[in-house]
Image (cartoon, rainbow, N blue to C red; front, side):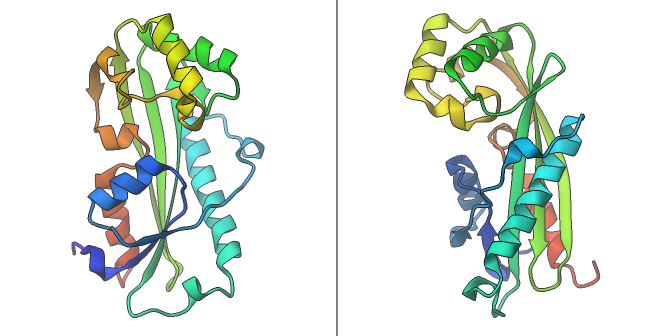
Length: 209
């Protein structure tokens, strides 16, 4: 059963403009945004896949608590779905989250020339009417040519790297010329796999799930 955008009302638990754009591109143009505001550093796991799944679930729990007693949880004509997601970058065996300083970004970003950056993202769709949850993990891999120090400095000065896991901005005009190849879709690298998200939406809407 393929669901149409009109088949559900969507709440997106993310302030990421990339995720907003991807969801709109999927045809879900009329969605609400509610953020979790959790301390992500307090949630840890040794494996990247486990970490992003735990974070996606923690965000869902925090948002559900926030929504209790609000209009968004009242019964609607269509099911209400909450989408939460998280992403990290794995580089040379190390899990990278958003850089906390210019020094960290300056150390991490040039390293992508040595070895590929692997994005690991989790998506969780919660049906607020039935309580059904459907989740999954998606990976992509980006290979870079040598990234110049000047470009790294410009990215840091602009500041967008501090809002992206691993400071990875493959779609950025300054960074994209250095992308050599990519395994997986750009949507996956940017934090929300269209294919995975649509599949999870359909799972969360199934009556027999």
